[in-house]
Length: 316
Image 1: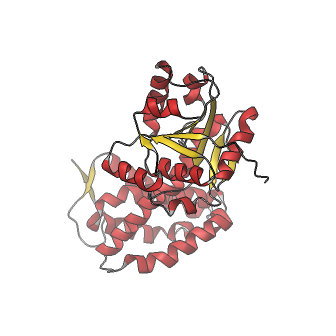
Image 2: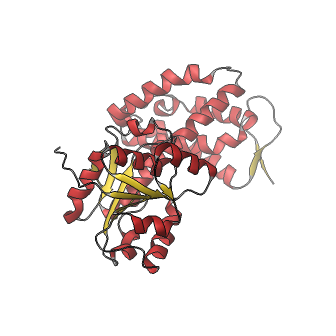
Image 3: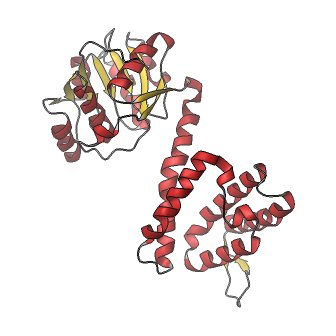
């Protein structure tokens, strides 16, 4: 992919958080000049001092007024009101480039700014950041989910490449689905790993990472290579007895984990069935067990005192 260049731009960062400060540093490294940023918390002020030296810390409207390129790096639910407020105050001006870093939003959220004559872009780096200087180097080769009008695609592509990233084009209508997929793959993965660590500690394992590191690394690699064909474990084999014992043990030792286990086991069984890893007669008793457990959990059921090997349930 050919890297075109833009004339040096004055950059304003609205939101010197982990993402905004790192992208600002990357833009600065490619020849642009970060002239101003917003920073409210002590952490964001410290981050701006480290990553955006020379940038004045100002209110959002003054940051925008100084910039040729405005980078909006604020929480998803804040973005709509911010853009509307800046537009209504007459802060945007024709010819400005205004981009946001939200994965959940596309171009529609920037419409009030577009009405003021700006060039709108949605550039979402598919990476997590700690807000440290080395994060700028981690941008190399990172994909950006990019949404832009056809006439503006060259500008969007150039900015991403200048920051060291790789543009991946996402249609406006698919933006929410795109973001939901990333949340499932990244944020939910962290929750699953943390859950597994806690369960291993409950089982008496002192160093859960020793077990999980190699296992999860191989599982991730295999799933990216082979998809559902990489499924292993009792659910993919239809081992209903093992799953039943898991549920009994979780009810006793980690009741808060039962619902998530059931939800993931059900979805795993459905995918294994669709992929041909499970036959229907193998999946049926497993799905029945999981459906019963889900119904019991939803109805306020709790385990009753019972003898060994039983799964008696009572309702309140």
